[in-house]
Length: 139
Length: 413
Image (tube, rainbow over all chains, first blue to last red; front, side, top):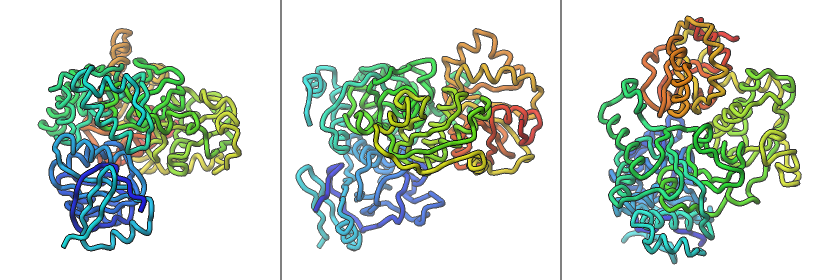
């Protein structure tokens, strides 16, 4: 498996797949944890505590601030699993870890089949480290 | 990661605790984007002054508490309030106070209190080939495309971390091999365009490459010789609004595109579109959410911040006064100083023009009456303001906007 840990850490939650990439700036409300982009197919869905599957990032670099703020407020996803690397999402999660010591691991899986297999799981634990990324199902 | 001796000094704390702390973020970021090493950077432009919540402030205050100082010349992007004209802010007071503190904390770190999205105009003009850590989408495109300096699309947090360390990760547009065009957009039918028309064309070209080329670098051919640096600024700003454009080539106009082969590195690159006057008019029409003759409540200019040459073009148009609606012009405080000393500020005020500095009318509460449409010559303003402010927008050339301000309705010059 070709998973790369962009932000190390541990997160656990239910799998939630976004049908379109989301810009955290302008598309996500850090106070409520909900998708607020009116044009997004999952408008209104709450992302808090979920293991979020998103193909790639989108939009303004201010998304990093919005994600960091959501992690601080505990309204963010528990982990973010991307297909392609994304610098904005990575930055937001790195900074939240640095400031608040809260993990929101970010992983890029370049293998689409593996990514699809994982988001179909009802609940999973993500442990992202420098050496390897582990996905397990809680007992 | 290959580390230089200078990198190690920073990591080991020889340049202070703030630099060492920021270096950890730069290194983790570099690892995530796959950069094999760091480069020294010539300057930074920081976009952290817009308040997005407590995390924005906590990040900066962390470095203030560690006695941090930026290690390279660092300019600041717009903030949430106009510090010189605070009375213009009509938003929530607590938000205004947090936004003000955020701006001041950056200055305590040694950043230049420029509060402009166009630091390349009068303040810190990079040189060709400089490696930069710049944020703010229009400034990034301008630095890469119009100046030939090199920066990726940096943004919140990383920009300041690079400034505090003086280091930037070596990947993407820092490297020559990633700066060539991989798409061509041909424009025809504008060879003899007047300056006013060239301005509208540039916005249309920018919107098009943003939407259809995204992060693929486009080479644009056929822009008229009357295209000014201000037009290229507007092109880049529009492109970075409708797509994640970090660089374009305007063949024959920008420094890394003396000709098409120069822009593409000699590769055969596909022509993705051919745009003539009717296609350009169609693209520009999409920017207006109201029809011609709609009532206006304001005109908004200067997104990105108006340059002194744009003021040169605006001044004779003030003869159209009296204006039926207020005209707002965003600019940098350094341009504003110039206007106050040379007497233009007084003439602008007398004509009913409000000059806004340090911020921008599309991100903050400045325009008092949003009950009707607002007209602008900025593709970026027209793209974002309907979403940010919930206002209707009409797009026109600079001359269109002034004639419309006089009429109180959307008219064409």
